[in-house]
Length: 350
Image 1 (cartoon, one colour):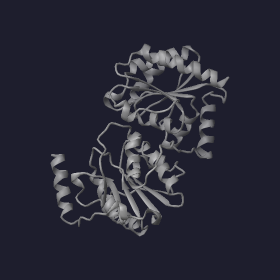
Image 2 (cartoon, rainbow, N blue to C red):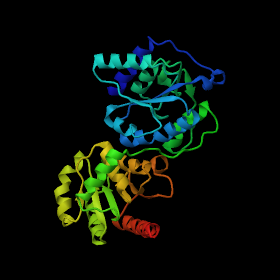
Image 3 (tube, one colour):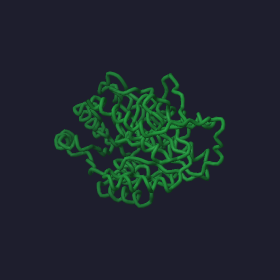
Image 4 (cartoon, rainbow, N blue to C red):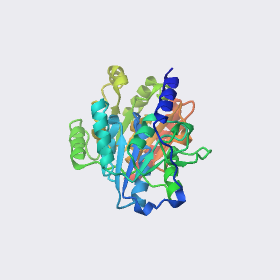
């Protein structure tokens, strides 16, 4: 019913939209001064994986103003990007929505990019891209677009990382786009807060701190019993451990504390920027495929990620800082990977 209702809504909206197409070869991108990125996403990991595109756009358009139109849920993370000039959130009420759309239009964006996944159509992304009234509106070609976009990017039918899928939008417009690194910055206020927060937990600047996030959406989450055994083993090796969690895991915390004999730090339920600041202090983060795991990757923190029900080639962390355990993930398999990482980390610290 939901799918049928959405398709009906798309057809109704399409009746009022005049389709138009641009010729990519005739578009002068040197005249672009203001760029809007549109991604309404309530999943932290998906939002973070769009950030290399933001950095790539900044490198190609160093003098442009770049805005990101995001859902309020994780917009706080985008505020940590030095490559963005503005983070925009559209309110849900009718009056607020209309007022915010008028504000976006008055900003006179020259180019708007719909950052929807190439394999999925997002009505909210497409509609907001259209409502921006940017003269150039770019996104992947899909049957449902119905005039929302005027410059459609052909879908590349091959498996590749989601970061590359976002970058292909820019590669279609401008050639020679490399894969840049993530670029997130912790401001001094949150950095100082994290240092004071951990000091109160008896964590000094010299301590090797391991973060462990016990959450995960649905089948992606490693079993809590395995996490408990891993935490017990790590604390017995005299490493300091801070456990991060989400609302769904709150009920598990008393038992986890008991099994670890109170040798762990259980974090508060932190705001996004405070969570980022504490993760940045960690020497290593262990997690299932979660948003905080992708946040650690973006912050250039070593990660050991556990992929049980996710596409590693599409979503897995890339680079020498990261190790992935996937498939049927046993406790011993994670321990063996962690031992290697800890030995290498100690050598770096020496």
